[in-house]
Image (cartoon, rainbow, N blue to C red):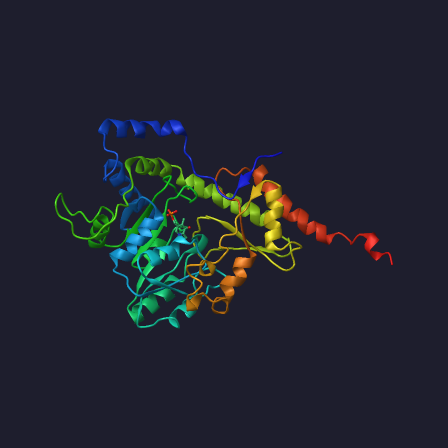
Length: 383
Ligand SMILES: *Cc1c(COP(=O)(O)O)cnc(C)c1O
């Protein structure tokens, strides 16, 4: 039996290259609290991503929680139901009310047209997600935010390295939040960051992630502990040396899927064309009517072959118990998100995925398509 193939696998540089970083940590005896590696990673990431300021965090969820605190968001926040649960959970943890807007089925992202009709006097912010690293309609969203005086916080957990019109997608909105979880394009085991555009906001965020300390004895805010440690920061620095190669490998895998799945009826995928520089963080396909298997049946058929695809994002956030009572969680209110959630399947994509393993994935999908193309068994025609 061939090895299992998972939907993702962490980017891991050679272990021996990590040893010198560890030796330096042991020598300095500084394990956390904004040590030298922490500072260096903030600088190198800002430079690599093409953004002004990076505030490192221990994970993306705490970064989202803190971003909402930093902007003093209150009341209602318009967001997407088509995301990882952490997006909405951070609203509940801040005592905010999520208001779900439907998505654009072409991009999987929040539809700007649906945002405006949901604004009430209680609305203070919009929290869109660059789903799969596909950019939101950032200009339209900013226009709405400007007209109504709303803050925009992007959940950019999938959007490491994504660029559009010559600039990082992370330069849009008031704040953008990255995740460096092991499963993401760039990882620090666990980790995350807030991207902001001015030094004063960075200072405020840095206070908030360190209990609100603004000096040895001065506490200026009810902060939290969300600091990235030196081991994680060092790992990030090492990984930055490999990220371009990893992104190129993802792109090659993406192209092989597109070629391999060409002509399979009922299977379609997202094509970025020349509209932006994608990171190919995911390979989402839609499994539709003309394909002989329903999405869940294909998911099971792959699993039977040791291939673990994932139904990102199903179920919708709005269908979980802590959200479904909300007026905007109703299925009728979110038709596009509900349709996509039933058809979506994310196929394995990560830099170390071998051509042979990828071919196994393609073969299973093609095999089931062929089954339908075969003429019906003659037995069925016997009267
Ligand atoms: C991974 C992810 C998060 C959470 O990030 P962590 O670093 O795991 O806390 C938030 N939002 C989205 C869309 C994600 O994919």
